[in-house]
Every structure is written in structure tokens, then in C-alpha cells.
Image 1 (cartoon, rainbow, N blue to C red):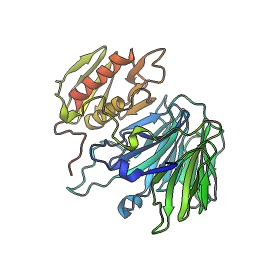
Image 2: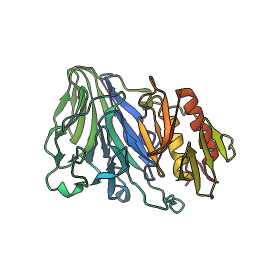
Image 3: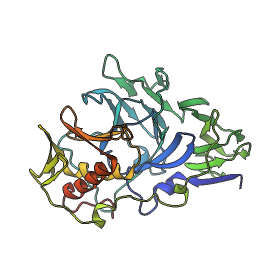
Length: 375
């Protein structure tokens, strides 16, 4: 078959999926598209291994699609906020290489959001990035007309900022990562790519063949009748052919670690390989590494630790509230680093580090904690 498709909302809503699990749905060389679903703020700040562009997709739920979004860009060494985006569904925002990005960053006391039974709502995000270390793009600031106030620098020398409203921009290339581009098309009659491509439908006419959030794979040289598509993103490579659809189209990615409710709790206090955790109260743990210590919210720490195990082999740098971090960017040569920002750290071979992460996860998760929501 020359044209195959799936729907990103359908993939994101499958029973058994995990929140904030960045699931790869398309690849071209090292570049990839990922999706993630979430009903909670992100648990950690992230420094990726490439530039990363993210977009909240339209879900059709007015409550979700009208929710105002905010992402902070921070200095990875100091934690100082350098800029922030106010964004919404359809905005493509840049998380530049080297800066921490944190969507939905909470303030103390970092209390989990508990919706009433039956009222949980999930958003779905599309992410364009690379799956291997990739150089950053140029220094150009790119913000849609009338949106300057929504990409606000805090520092005298802010990181690169881009906020592009895909529902109002004219057709053009919006983003580049490595050898691949993400191009906006408006009311195309046909779509084709000599090396193949992936098409993300953003909006379509009622009754059209394709609908919003469809993901279409085009084989090289095949022409797609795009009648009824109002707006779409096209991912294609300059020199590299689009890979076939990954297994995530037909099955859920495996969890390499059992979720908390499927395993056995381990006791606190915890101590292994120079990292210790003690329980000052039911909502926090104190993490100690060397002479450094920090109080970390148990709920968000558990969420972060499980995501670390989901995102093997390469996640980058992640840091949760309290400054606890995990850094696997140099694991092949130096090992994996766990530490407290501005304080002490330990470096372990990858298998030992991931074993520690799993054991710590099973120790710090609070009572009644679960990865799978039931409401």
C-alpha cells in the first residue's frame, strides 16, 4: 500500500499507555516525531540531545483545547529561568538545545492535581526532535505576528526563541532538525515527496477523507490526494528517505520496568552507591549525595524515575523539583550521572544506574501511588 495512516489521538488514548511517555511515531534518519499524552504538568525539566519543537494538538475537547499553556526555559547549571512561552493548541514552540524546558512548572508546595472522579482530561503533544545528539539550528528568533509578548525573555542574553502559530502562519518551513524539515502546507491539492514523508493533519473539512491529527506515511514518489485537508505539517528529509511506520502504530511500546502497582515496594530509608533517601514526611523525601542534600516531592520524583526507565537508551538531562537530576548524555564514554544541581553527584555504568533508579522508584513513591489512572 502506497499511503498508510493512523491517528495520533487514537494512539495516545490506547488503554495501557503511560502519561508523558514520549513515543516515537515517525523517523527520518536521526530526526523523529514523538507524541505524548498528559493530564498533569510535566514532572521534570528536560535538556534534550537536539533542538526540540513541541506542539499541543487539537483534541476536540473544548476544555482541553482552550487551556492556556506555559513553558519555561531555564539555565541547566543554575536553574534560573531565562524565558517563558505562553502558548496554546497549534503553537509550535522551540526548546533550544542546551536550555532546560519545563512545561507546566509548579510552585511550592508542588501538590499533585487530583481531578474529581470522571473529570480527568488529557492533552496530546507532538514533538519534532532527534533521537541522537544533533547540532543546534541558527540563532534566528521566529515568532508569529502579534505574539511577541508570548515569547518573553527574562535574561539579557536569552536562549533562542520560536513560537509559530500553525493555524495562522502562511505556508512555509517552520522548523529544521538535522537533515529533516517540518513544513506547513495550507489547503494542498496533492502532496508528494521524492524521498517519502510523513504528514500530520492539523485541520480538515467535515466529511473529508482525512481528519485532524491523522498521521500519514507517504512512500517515495507517491502522490496523495489531499482534498479536504485545510492545514498540515509535512516531515521530510533533505537527503534521507522516510523510514516505514514504527511498531508504535500497531502496539504499545514495552515498559522495561513494571509500573509501581505491579511490583513490590522497597523500604525507606534507601541507600545505594552513594545515594541515600530518607523520609521526613509523607509527601517528601530527603535525597543525600555526598555532602549535599535536598528535599524532593515524592509524587513527582516517582513520576520522573519511571519516565527515566521508559526512555532508554537516551533521554538527555532531566531534573525534578528540589534539583535531583539524571544525565545520560555521555553514558557511552563516562557513564550516567545522578546528582543534585549545584551539589554532589555520582557516576555509574548504565546498568547499575538504571537498577538504582528502579529501586529508588519503588522506595519513594507515596502511598496509593499508581502509574495507571482509573478515573
